[in-house]
Length: 346
Image 1: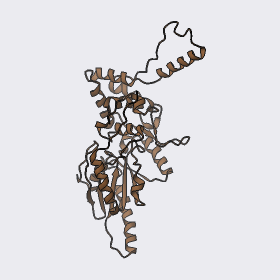
Image 2: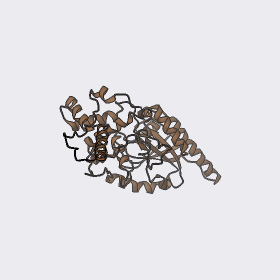
Image 3: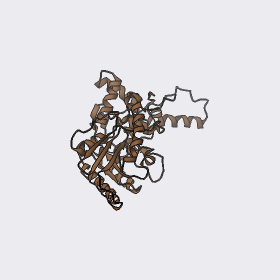
Image 4: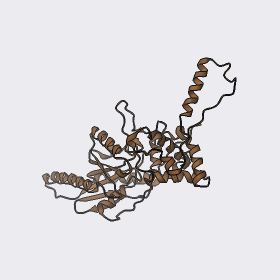
């Protein structure tokens, strides 16, 4: 049975987007912030239209949450696309100084053009834009070197637009996270849910946790994603089991053709190759949360979001042999309905 899609577009985002459009004319520079674990899923489809030819800096935040191999792979791919990514960790400050210098250089170019028209110089006005919970406010606080705006690792903390001055050369506009009104790509929606970049009311935590287990299973074959070997077994004492194929009773195939029997056996083998995320969740819950699968699901997701499981990239760059519309999710079954049977709430 098909499950409802993951959708999240709260009223404060719609209001902030209207306010944002009114402020865009005042902005010289757009600083787009993405999540290093899912750089393509956190790329806003309307950004090019909003920029209207303005200068842009691409920031990939939370570089500490992916392996160096994954970072280098994405860096090469982005540069091949003509992008210049600025890799940052707003929590520790890594890369923030270099980003500030790049923004100020953009301001110098702006003021050189203003001087050519006989106008006085002024600070560059930069809009900090991105999906919810990708670290925009934390980045601003790091640039200002104080807690100038509210910041927390959950979606929906920033709800209004606010200007913040950085020294004498840079003014930053902190904006709430913006989302498309409808998440058409449900694989990307699942990745947003896993990284806590959309509100938890939009999805069922147990279903998303099961989908995450399937992602982890596929990650094992992609070395650059940084997944440690036997992660689940070492961390939780429970290995990820495989699904059991259906066993046929004696004589059940007597009337079937050879082709039908071979097809049935191939299907059973394929089924047995798939991970059984629900069985793992139940076993782990019995071991750690007194059988409460909802609590175990939340624990698993929180451990990933806090990097307790180590640096793990959930996307890899599109491969040269194919041209998908979005980056390759590291699991072939990243659809929450197909991968996990997750019930998600509209």
